[in-house]
Image (tube, rainbow, N blue to C red; front, top):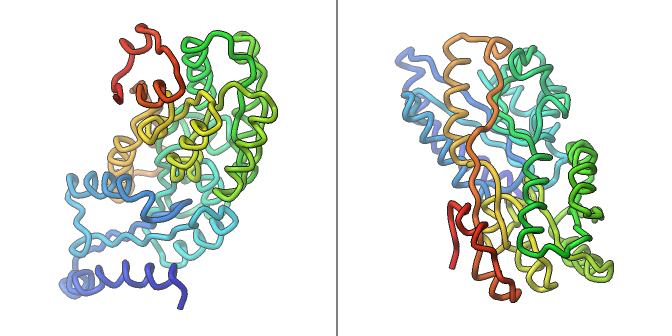
Length: 326
């Protein structure tokens, strides 16, 4: 038995006795499927935020709720297989995250309700028809990655106005990168920045990608919110510093050692996802639940990294920062 199957069985076994007891008493068990794109250990804080949201609404694992987890372990090709597994378990609602997982789930079923915890731009990616009227069997939350990326480039320009070559790490099996890069062309042009894309399929490609950036005279790198990049934020941040590149990405990226973070509060989105699940379990159709757009954003500045790169961070950026890491 391989490690993934063992962990899956072990995780599910903990809920069996209590769930079986509840079924014997005639209570309705809420069965939730959770599809993860990365490793369980890398997503632990977000899963816990989701669980806290559920508990706040009265859903207790092992008593009236069972969560079936499936993890693609950074292999997006496995998302379809894992989605099918969850559907076969007859889950009452399927919880997904990110553009790849959301698209796979949408293609896999038109009947099982789907809650999308987050997507870089659900409308542009073709996941929902509109925010107000998502249609079909999917709803949830979204935010607009191109706008976040443009803001990150502006902040890098504030730190070092002379930058003109900016690298974008691209994961080719995440279809949202095409949409995001196209939307970034105009903001980059207005900032006199030339974008260069460097493809990586996983952590084993990071070192070669950053070495290629150095050879291409890149000044900085901007990181999108792909699940693999989030899970490996520290490794990416360390490589950016190693190759003397300014860097900007999501908040966790700066907390892990990147220079600048600007983005949404993902833990809050996972807590909020429980509200969507609750509505569906109470009988509301996903098509009737508007997709919510993230409205709260935070700036994180890592002064430790700035000092390592010999940078003078402008006071204006520090004053805008919600968190400054010394």
